[in-house]
Image 1 (cartoon, helix red, strand yellow):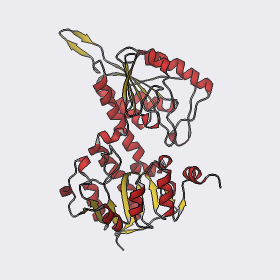
Image 2 (cartoon, helix red, strand yellow; image 1 turned 135 degrees about the vertical axis):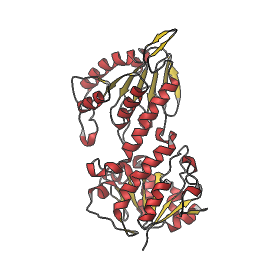
Image 3 (tube, one colour; image 1 turned 135 degrees about the horizontal axis):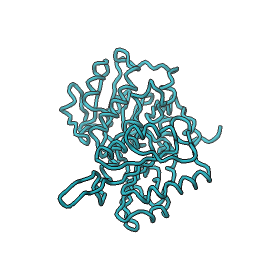
Image 4 (cartoon, helix red, strand yellow; image 1 turned 45 degrees about the vertical axis):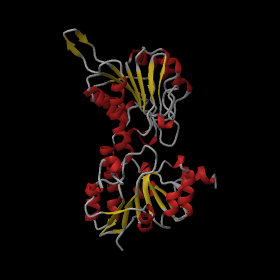
Length: 376
């Protein structure tokens, strides 16, 4: 039986990304699937209904859910949306399960199979499906653009009739995908860039982009490409060295986030007090509370002449390309399961089993199961 893939509107306030762009919709049709979307689903990312050729646009979300075998989303569905879904249907999206425990319970109780895109393993075969990386790349780029907007200085060196303006000093804290993109963007704008990460393995990547790496007397390599938690002594060493570099920077961009856990506090109030008046901190780790002690998620504040910007859902601020990248991630995840329009899953595939959140009335992801059901 031909699988029906459906894409509803995103109801999360401020979410402008969409799960399916017209190019990917056409590719799903070529694989033999039926594709339906909710009317005006793509408007927030500047994709009109007319762009989705040969795709049925439904007026009612309830009707869409009634037909859907596979539902593609950006954000986790609400309790009301889950109520409309067919028992046994499949949901794929960025689920942030630790923030949606009631929704996960309802998905379990309704025997809905749910795949969380952020749980896709970071192995070479799954790189094209890695939605965390694609969206972090958008966030890193956008962070520098926001910083340039808020800054009291030019980024590039300028030689003018009024004299030479020295380039801005930019410090990037956290050299994951977002940090690397921030380094590259700040360099393109002409700034002098330094970067820091507790993982020494990132030094070569930083230098390859033309930035200076701040060395620490310790390393904190963790599992899955993330850093381990620092000891109390290591935190003191980190803060003492970082304080000097933060005090000399015009712009500080912090990106150190750990999925499912609070963001590590790297910049205390005392460090902010040592910064130059007119300096800017853009804390894109604010979704997890922020890397700066003073960050107020979702707000821009000023403290002793320093602007601290704590944006939320940064990729959504560039909805067209963020949606295009995310939609490709979804296609690369889903397409190997589609054979002549039918869904055929290999339950021995590491990518499928690792990203599985709920299935057949059970919560399959152990950390989420522990949060909801406790130790069993």
